[in-house]
Image 1 (cartoon, rainbow, N blue to C red):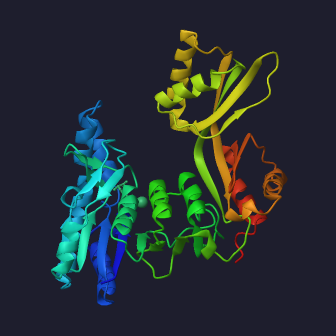
Image 2 (image 1 turned 90 degrees about the vertical axis):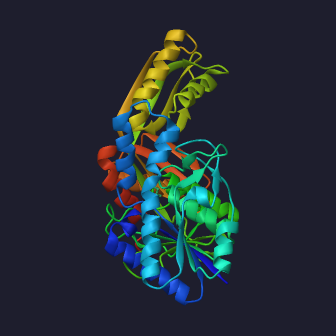
Image 3 (image 1 turned 120 degrees about the vertical axis):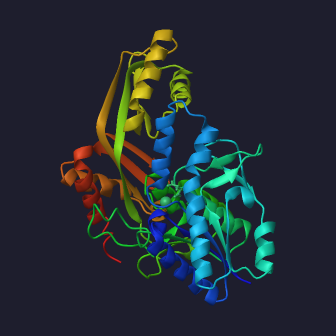
Length: 408
Ligand code: ASP
Ligand code: MG
């Protein structure tokens, strides 16, 4: 029997009425003759609440117990949805991660799925069960402890199940109707995309579009899972995340991404010789600073400046780490300058590979609005710039207009 995976996010399962709405949507699939694996998130806000509770009881918490607590929101919604389905007469059963089991590595709080055993669920389907409701975001480590997959991890659970069970498709139901050309809260004329390639989606996700966890997109791309993002509140086909070849439209740019809370840190007058960048960024990595763009320019008299960007909330740990380096004498520099008032604007599109002039057009659009560019970084299908945070809305709008993303 054909199998589909459906995943419902926190707002979709927030309360009894919405859980019943989800059950009705699942029933549409079973009535069409499909078996269904439903992956659920915790109710909206629940995971945050649980992690704050852990923080309140113990500041230096044990990551295994953190996972034991924060994974529980999903257990509740999985059980409730199985009950709502049974109420509709649909044979359904819930599974927590360890019951499947979903095996992960032992990186508690950001664990990776290693494998999913299909037997227990397959056996139940063979006995006539129609729906397996799986608690997302969680698994079990080799040594039998509960693990969690990082925020937004239910998306990854869903894609991993779709791959493990060779599902026909994986539908991710959320509170927006798909993937947009820009954040609709910033650009009123942002348009929903009908299709987006895995690679573009990967860029959007890692640039901070919250709609899918980055890891889930990687997994989908690797396993060629047909992924759809759609709304649980209104009907519509959503956005299909698929292979490049399935996309007819040949635009240079598919969308504009923006990330508000960025910082730019510059080390002034660093020695320009082998090993310095390795030492600086090795240190930042051990301090868990999430470094994004890195720029180094030509040197003068053997000294140069190194600039990098990171999330605003990582600046103080970066400064602490860099000060320690200076005191130890490992790397010498004159000073650190941190600008915590910047944001990142990016244009993304697979069409960029074959079309020239995208950077020029982007920079001109920003210049026409008097927006100064602080740092530029590019990849094959993306151009990102840092600009003053106060220009974020203006900048996103300018780029959206320049690439005519409101037009089909
Ligand atoms: N409940 C978890 C979170 O809020 C996992 C998820 O919803 O994807 O991050
Ligand atoms: Mg999510």
